[in-house]
Length: 394
Image (cartoon, rainbow, N blue to C red; front, side, top):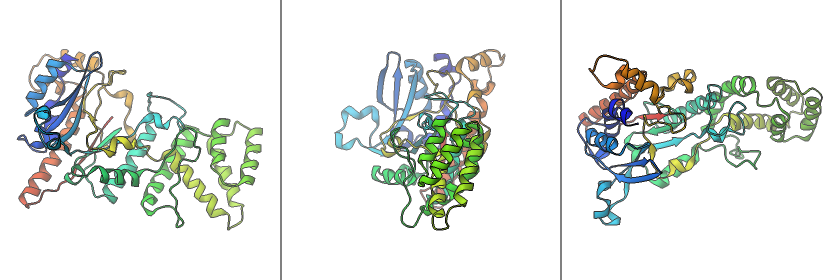
């Protein structure tokens, strides 16, 4: 890890992304950094004035990973010298964490922390929904996305914990543990909330290729029984249960088609309720599963970009939401691969990462940060303080 930090980690890019300017501001100097060392030693409330200061400490500690916290009212390293009331979290990016393990009830290819290009489809769907909601409903812009989504605009940075809870509540649709079969219960007497109409349209186009064709979620008896438990009509359920039990080789797409066809034969006054149930199935299988606790509190720590996953050795990289469907999680470089690449080059010019397969990801973050810097310049020129930006990580 030490060679990775010394030769490859893009500290200047991280500094500018967090700081929003080239010269240090409180967005960086009052920012908490936490380090995890060998033996699960955890060091919190570190802070630094420059990117070089951060690099020196990281190289001295050689942590297995490090995390980024909020901007405090005082420098975190001075925590012990200030009154508790004078040391409070003031600002932090609005973060959304999509945990792949929460999809274990619907994906058929992997489980637990494992992830492949097939179940990445669930993440891609989540990214599209979140990007649309945050830009169209809440007014945040300039998005870059992944398993962790951090919204960096000042209005998001300044949200209180109560405001964060309210925002997360508005975006939470799938709720309930393994014991709860129906996990979507957001309808009111007027039907599906208008805020979810756009998400439903987006996810309808994803549901067939992902849930029916690729994951084939209703192929097994357990899968189709779960589906039938979500249909509020006993006659429909019994008819299809008998039919599918006699011919269990039907594909998920066939079963879904037969379910829709059978609903179409029901009485007109019954159909709306059953069609709503189908919409809820689409939402339950494809809507983002957000870890609400990560988003609610300003003092929650965010995994630093370009840190290394402890099990796979792969680097956590930022992503472009416009290319989210084409992303392959197994194509992300490992530390060992990057060190081989940098050691195979003869030139010592430029940053180490520029000579490796990490370059496209650092360039992506730098382009994203350029947008932040330009917005800052424009807002300053106009005497304003609000500018917008989002970024996310795998």
